[in-house]
Every structure is written in C-alpha cells, then in structure tokens.
Image (cartoon, rainbow, N blue to C red; front, side, top):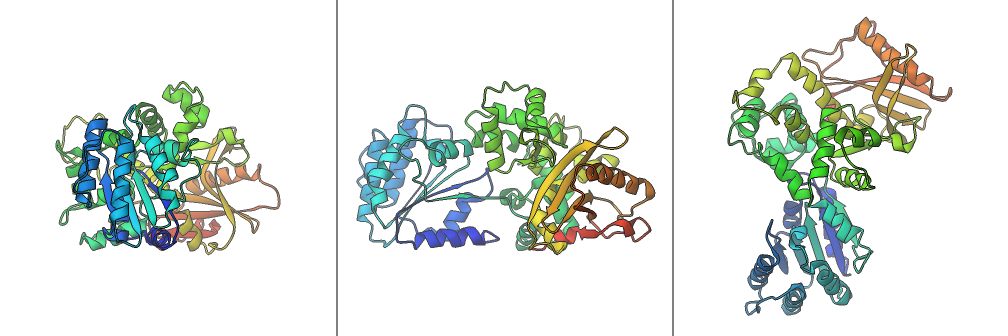
Length: 470
C-alpha cells in the first residue's frame, strides 16, 4: 500500500487494545477509506457489510441478511427491522472463534433510510451489548460526512462520546502520488505528476484511471472531455454521495470556484445566494472536514472575516473547464497546452498545491522545528489599492515569511516590475505587523530561479522538487 502508514499503525494498535473499540473512518468519496480498512486487516473480519446507495429499508435489510449468511449465519431468519438485524449480528459474533471480532460496516450512512430506526438500533447494539465485550472492534465507514458527523461523532443521544477513534482520511500528498504513479508504471516526470495533481488532486481512485503510454493531457481529454469520460459525471456523484441534500454544498463550491482568491463567510452567503439561517456554518464545517475547502485566518482581522477557498483540485478544474463544455473538441486540453489560458489556470492551481504542502515548504526553509502559524492576508497598500498575500508563515523566532508562488514555462526570473509588486505587498503588510517582526520574501517556484539583481532581495527559495520531499 502506498502511504497511510500512520492510519494503518493506529488501526492495528486499536485491534490489539484488548478493549471494545468503535472506530469511525470518514473522508471524501474515492479517497481510499474502504481500501485502507480491507488492506490493513487483510480481509480478516468476523463480519463485513456495505450499505446500498439510493435504496429503501427493505432492500437494505435484505442485503444485510445476505451478508450475515455469507459470514456464517447460514440460517439467518428474515429481518423485519434493524433491531432484528443487530440481534442476528450478535449471533455471528458469539459463534466466532476469532480472538478479536472485527466488524466492518462500510457506507453506513446509506443504511439510515427515512423512518428506518437504524440509529437507535445501532445505539442499542453498541451500548447494550458490544461495548461490554472486550473482544469487539466495530469499524464504520462512510463518504456522507454530514451523516457521520451528525449521527455518530456529534450524536447527542445514545452514541454521544461512544466513538473511541475517529479517523479523517486525507488525500495523497505529491510524494505519495509520485510513488503511486511509479507503482502503476506511468513513467511521468515530476512536472507531469505536478500537472496531474493540479487537475486530480491526491485522490488515488482518479490516479488509477490514468492510462499508461499516453500523456497526462491526453488522459484528461479522455477522462473529462470525451462523451463517455469516466470523470465527466463525477462532480454530481461526488457531492450527492457526500451529502444527503447536496444543493447548498454545490452552491458554496461553485461560488468559491468562481472566486479562486476566496470569499469571507458574508461574501459567500451573498455571492452564492444562500439564506443563512444558521446552517451555513454547518455546511462550511462539513466541506472543510472533507478537505474541499480551507478556512484561512486573515492576520489583523476578526475571525468572521476569515477567507474560505475551494481547495479540491478536481472540483476547481471541473467548474472552470468541464461545466458548460459543449463537446466541440475531444482534445480540448491538449489544444490548450502552453496557451495564456493554460498558464493562468496553472498559476492558480500551483498556488493551491503549495498551500496543501506547507509542511514541505517549511522543511525546505529549514524551519520544520520552528513553531509557526500560517495565515492569509488582505489589506490596503500605500496607493490605496487592495493588497493580498495568500500565504504568510508567522514564525516564533521573530520572522514572517511572505511566500510568493510562481508557475512558469521557463526558469523563474524576477524583473523590476514583478519585484515592485512584491515590495508593494510587503510594504502594506509592514504597516500592520509589530515593529519587532522582520519580513522575509520567499519564492516558491516550479523550477529554478534565475539569479539577478532582483533575486538577491529574496531571502528563501523553494522549488517544486522540495514539495515532493517528505
């Protein structure tokens, strides 16, 4: 398995704890939750079941009964309700001679159909029986993050405080994607891996679709722009699988996709046409918990003025290039390579990748052991015009790093005009920082820097290669 060492180690520790364990694994669709659990335990379960999408209680119970029979309960009676279902699961556990009874229920949110009584039955099973047994480990998974958080992690009823471990599965890093590409024999350069990451993010399932023998751009044409492209309909499926009522979430994502520089909460409500009603915060929390959006505190501003940005690379690419695509060309992406539009998109996409790899940037700057806080910043420059910095690293050694991120065709060369723009932002920031703080400019580029008079003003350099180091 590529990556997931920390998660695998923790799951094995829980399996060996000698206590009853209730583990919730969640994360966005296609991130590898099911694969992680199955590979960690090598299929050595006492019981395993997966909920069915978009079906009613009767079909869910029929499927659960089939799983019970498959895992040893050959004479399982017909199930009338979820109390019956969990009672029969007890029989499977009791009859097992395994020392550790690992129960894996995947896509649990789909099983909680309207008026089915599923959650109270689950509460009864765990609180009234399983939690008293030191040999039971229940692992539940689900892409519908809002359900996992509301019904399991933040449950105010019988499951309150019952989860012993919650595990949010994050997308792969650049290095993990590089290793995965190598394992599949894709033979990609790091620049190609970077481009794939800027389109697909770190979602292993998407990377698995990349075909050998053709370029990343050809793969994108095939997956996203051909009539039967496997990722062309993924956007709707993605949000429908995560959230029972996807509309407000899609509104938020679409609004942030149209404003890549980010929006405040109030700006988002206005731009997306949301009626706040106190639920917008919940929507934002759930999108953030899946890694779709980030909430960046803006130094010098109140918390309510935090900046929300869409960070899911696939969603951003889809919203910009695939939405409204009329099929005028099946080679849309290969035809746009090296154009001004391509580099406009790539510049923004590279910034997002950098924001996802702050730990690697800090390591390259040799400040990995320094306590830091990362911020965005918006203000007004001396000329009265807005100024924005997407990444500040505020270090407890008295330095604030301004990270300038550049994606270019050739080696990056600063000129007088570019340095003037950087100096303008630095000057605006200087006006709001304590005098004791020093400001350093750091360049983060996809290639090497050209050394000239202006580069001498830069205090730190990070290249794309540094983002691959873990």
